[in-house]
Length: 142
Length: 142
DNA sequence: TTCCTTGCAAAACTTTTGCATTAAA
DNA sequence: TTTAATGCAAAAGTTTTGCAAGGAA
Image (cartoon, rainbow over all chains, first blue to last red; front, side, top):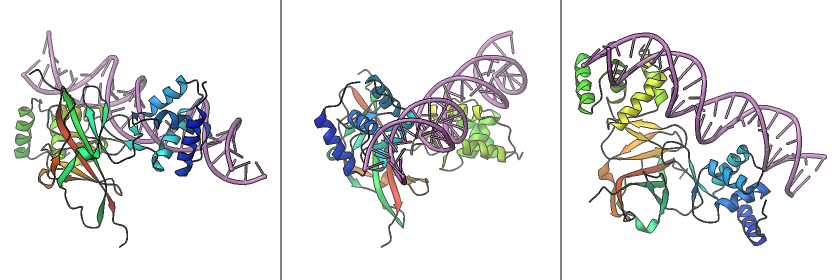
C-alpha cells in the first residue's frame, strides 16, 4: 500500500480537524481519495478505490465515514437518479447537470444560474437550500 | 372490496389507453388511488392503500405498474432524499418544496419560478428537463 | 392459442446495525 | 485507561427477477 504524501496528509489533517473530525488512517485515505478535486463518487466507488490502493477497509467504515463527512460539512450527499446516492466533494453552493445517457454528474457553477422569481416558503418555514438538476440527453440527429 | 365508481373507471380506462397502457383490474385500482389528485406516494404506500381497500395485489405488480406508468408518462418518478423514491401524479412541468423536518413534498407551480440565466448544455447535449427542489426547514425562533 | 399480466418467493442491491477487536487520546 | 473507530457478518429496506399460474385478445 502506497503511502500518502506527507504534505497532503498534513493538509487533510487540518481540514478534518477544522470540521471536528478526528483524523484516523481510514478517514485520511477516504479524504485523500475524495477531497482532492471536485467529483461525485458512490460509496462503492470509494470502497473500490481504497482497496485498489491496497488498503484494508470495511464497508461499514466507508459508510460511517462518508456519513460523518457529510454531517460535518466536508462533503455533500446528493440523491440524483433512483438508485444509490452520491458524495460530492464540492461543498460550495452549486448545481448539477445530469447526463441521462451515461448517468454522469457535472457541476454547474452558481453564477451560471440566476433566478428571477422564486416562491415564498410556506408560513413558518425557511429555505434551507436549493437543489437544481438539469437533465441532459444526447442531441437527436439534426 | 368496494367497487370503483363506473364513471371514474371509464375515465381512467381512457387515460390508460391514451398512454398505450392496457387497463387491467390492478392497474385501474392503482390509477384510481394515485391519479385522482396531485400527490406523491411511495410504492409501499400504494401497496398499503390497495390492501386497505381489500384488494389482493402483489408487490411485484405494484412496481411493474408504477414503472410502466412512469415509462408511459402517466406519472413521474422522483428521487428526493436518499431512501425510497416517490411517484408523482402531477405530470405537468413543476417543481417541489421538500420539508426536511417531515419529509413531505409539495408542488411548486411553474409560474412561481423564473430563470434569468441558465447554463448552456455541453456540446452535443440538449436539456431534457429541470428538477428544482427547494429544501425547507422550520423557521428558527425569531 | 398466444401474448401479456399477476402473484409469490427469492435474489439483488444499497445502507445500517450489533458486537468483538483495535487504535487513538 | 477510557473512549472512539474499525471490521465483519448479519440485518434491514427497497426494488428487481424467475417462474408458474391466470387472464385477455
